[in-house]
Length: 253
Image 1 (cartoon, rainbow, N blue to C red):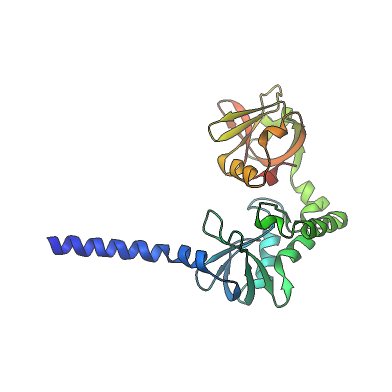
Image 2: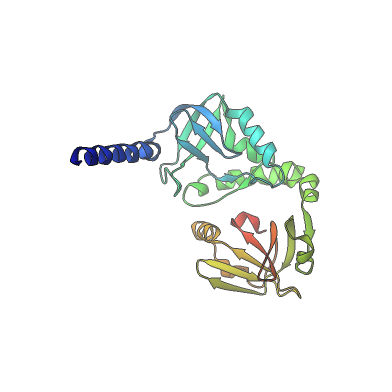
């Protein structure tokens, strides 16, 4: 009986250790040349050592957003099944999800910059790593905006209907862009309610994940009060009130 218990405990310990290997590897992984085993989306890849790498300083569209697939496919074309140069950010090697934060080069092509230049990503200035090349990245984003490429194109804008807070109830379950003035900002646990004071009582809810990103970027949700903003997301209904969940500051323009 005692032997069986010890064996079970040993097996459990080994399982925990093996599960932790990717995180340990991520924390200790130096810059260097690595083989890309898989592409998760436009800004995230998995190396052959099992470590997940998140590109620094930029953010590609999420699933169900315009140009999500185009950004992922472009990333596949650039890095899938190739050896790439991974430059790990020394100031913050990993994020809270255990992903390595890095700049990636494939065959001499800077991947982060390419996605921005082609209009398949927007600048993401989460300090400290996101500030390192922020000025250069903003210039690339502005270039893509001026050329109306990718996410800045008329096609991307028309793919998502723009509505007013009054119209929110008419578009339940749809991904829309909503334009309106934030009348009040109220805390709710670790979330925030942005009240647009429409006849329908429309509100946007900044969820904890997005609240953390606001803090990391040195931004204050309270600064949205009184501002006219454009937000993008899916309209849902809670307790009879239409609302939109905001999972990233990038959803607010």
